[in-house]
Length: 282
Ligand code: AMP
Image 1: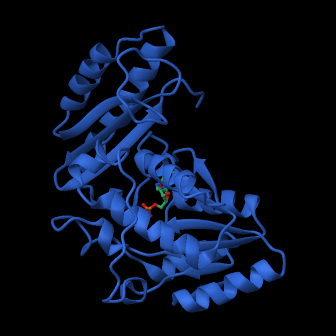
Image 2: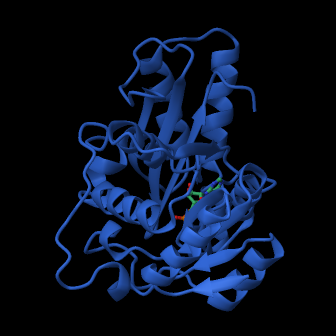
């Protein structure tokens, strides 16, 4: 596996692969890999001849009071894990190389970014779409794999690609969970043992909502109240709980196919998100 540190060298590599007629699959990440990341890498390998994983803790998608400074990192371990998955290139640029001081462009998707995580993290999605747009230009992938764990991010990136007529296939990968249902996340390492137990309320809420939907229940307002009560049985702060359409992200009053339960909570200082497409088979 090659480790590439600068956008210019990355583009030289990509141009060579493209000249040789090879397809490139990209997995954008912020590192500190877990099984969720590795599944995305496997999917990218399955879908393309060459696989690039970007590892970049993107400063512009963090708010001033967020965890940029303490975001978990273990570059040596990440290299080993990516190599073990048969990744061709780990692209790990410095912030200065991605955002030289004169850089002054932002890619902004409006509308879809107003609510949910966008409401509580102003500027976050502009940071995400800007870095993803840059990665697409630098690496020129045929496809890029994103996790459904970051449900709104996937919707926003899909919208950006459609709006800008970008010839990149965006692939959404199902959420990878621990055996007890907790969605894997680099941020789970922040949780104490007790907090880790409390975090399971997210999966309990999903299981409850799924059961209700399976029995034909369609009233979003009531279901949201039940989910809220379930979450509040633990010492958590609810940032949002909503039932939205998977494509438009608009709240649904009457649940139907495409309804997604989306949640963001805080446990102590740790912010966790989770979601579930309630009408889809697991
Ligand atoms: P991150 O490093 O947290 O920015 O995540 C990089 C990519 O991995 C994003 O597309 C995430 O949605 C995806 N991802 C993170 N956790 C999971 C998970 N538990 N299951 C599936 N995808 C995930």
